Length: 348
Image (cartoon, rainbow, N blue to C red; front, side, top):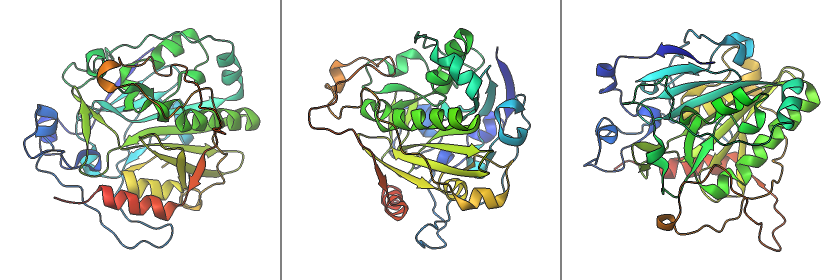
């Protein structure tokens, strides 16, 4: 089951979108139309100050979009794009168990949103994995990613709404839409990111329900692309517990890290330009949450084959954890994350 909803400016307006996703083009002479539309833009930090947990980025009035699938969002309200330059060529696609806002510039989702329930997760546990990666037919060919973009790229097709959350075969098949994927380093996808996904599922099972919003971030000037698809510098996951009336965000660099950062939903919005939970109170978004620690999964080795000899992975191939590796993940201080982000976002 798919629904389609147009969101954002026309393609003509998109040519002047500016700093889409908060990025800087990787080259002054881009090699394809995707980066051509971004080449003259610069990532602009509006820094009010770094005060332990305060960094003002991408600040503007939020844009609340109409949605065709409110069941996936807290209070029925879709995430708000707080940076107008992210709105170019964006389209909502509704699926059975999740929804995405897709960007025709990055050819990735800007976010994927889910309402996890204990009952659905119990159903999901009964399903074996059955890969079925495919381009998204609800998106124009000129805006979507293709299997060929990922082939032999050295990157996983990394789920934003994970296959492990899907309660039926039909929902599982929909989770393999490339509209739900970002290029992700394998050790990250199979390691700390898989651990965060598992922690969210466990919290939803313990409490009965959880709202989850996940997405990529494209920060700084050192950007890569595979085919026509931009590679995110970070991935993030917001969880909102109706039972606790609290919410928080995980942020992870898209590399072989075993570290993650935790921050409030408001701080994340300033960093990435997307307010994941506009339907909940400002107090909840500002307060943060004691997030559960990522759960070690089978996989996540920091070793990887040569990129030019390796096909795109089927999302999470099994990898043996090296002997002596306890498999733990470290919480990284938020102020360090801010400093890292600023360094990555240096202007030309």
